[in-house]
Length: 251
Image 1 (cartoon, helix red, strand yellow):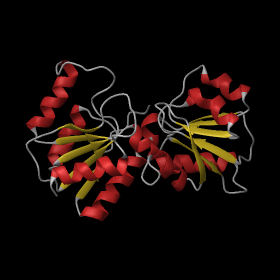
Image 2: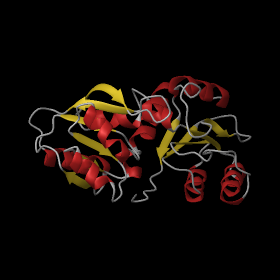
Image 3: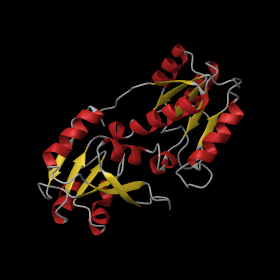
Image 4: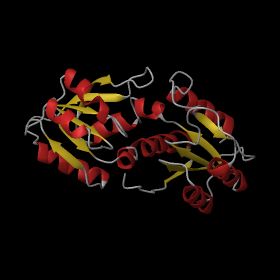
């Protein structure tokens, strides 16, 4: 498949130009390779990941966390090393951060809800103006322990659980990655349980204050599902070969 056609499709499907982010998304590094037949999928962009993508023969590395964040950086140091490595192996880099979190079909949060059996009823948590989180109903009769067990099985993770909410949750808010600071917002929207990625000491009392269950399943683990769902979509639609490269950070 021609790179330009694939990039155009991804930009439109993910609404790359419409969703504000912390840095430019979409095609971040353009190599000389214009024919895309193999797409490596990953959460992050780092030298070991690029090397594995190259060893597999990838034409494009499609990631959730790209290489540009905030203000413009010099192409030097660690950033320069990543760019040089991608170009040395003739690999295009495409990144979709908040756009992938927010996508209603293949996004991290829509996919987490689907896989956990949570019926999505609405969207919330808009760090850059576009809601990225899912708010939904738990299957009646599901205990907190059962919900945690589903998370463990689905994501192969060891979550930290703050059991300050009901034993039998009814309404769950989901935001992959880092959203513990939005515990109060989730409670205000009627959620009794929050599923997100990473935590810190200060989040304990927020969960207690709002009588919320909070399941911290890991930043990395909660963001593995979106790129894989997007990869399946591209494979089915265009016949390209995809492979998920798993580099867990335990964070």
